[in-house]
Length: 308
Image (cartoon, rainbow, N blue to C red; front, side):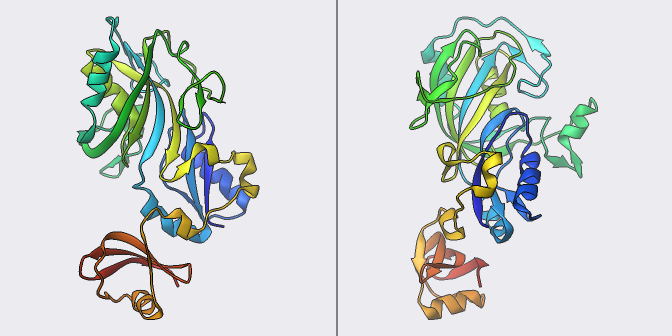
């Protein structure tokens, strides 16, 4: 059984999702291609049995979100788990000002991860230290933010839209309605549609957007609407996992494809480096079957992973 896109419900960890999938599908070999926080919902992509070898290629996929960023209140977790540890009044904000601030975060940059994260320093998890009242020195990490679209500024997260048109994820009177975490109060809230590269923390982005506006902030709600090529509209509930439509290994990989002949396929499976003009990463197929994932430098192919 290959790749399945799941719609993670509120309050479950990604580990919880994997554990349930293992029970329901009767296998221990289940991995996922990107963690989603307990207070976030939306797409988690599962790789099952032999398809767990795909995780290394899919972890770097871009991801898209709807984010509710509440201003004027900070929390240690940077989200609605709380408690509030900093509170200020928020001056009136124009959409032009907020759009200008959001635009300043686009592109490659360095981002400091949240203290409440699974990152390790010296073999110790950051969240374990944070829960014990301490803090680790977490170095900034390179991330890339591709798009931040302001969908509105609202007096509170309670007043912000929760129903969206699944075609473009714009607020709509009818469509998909999301359940958000219990709000920590009535704070001015930005509704943002985001597309980000691998490793980007939306909780850190909420903190940093608030800082750029001169106030503390936290992520009051988050929905992942896409992970790589997997869209929320195609994801299944955990209850529907056993009957979920599955995706083949070849279809799961979002790379250009090279159709090989018998000689090229044989050389790649033997780990050789045949001559080829490809630059970048691609999948190699033979008769519609996946042979290998390769990297090309314009002169030869190097096998990253081969399939028998």
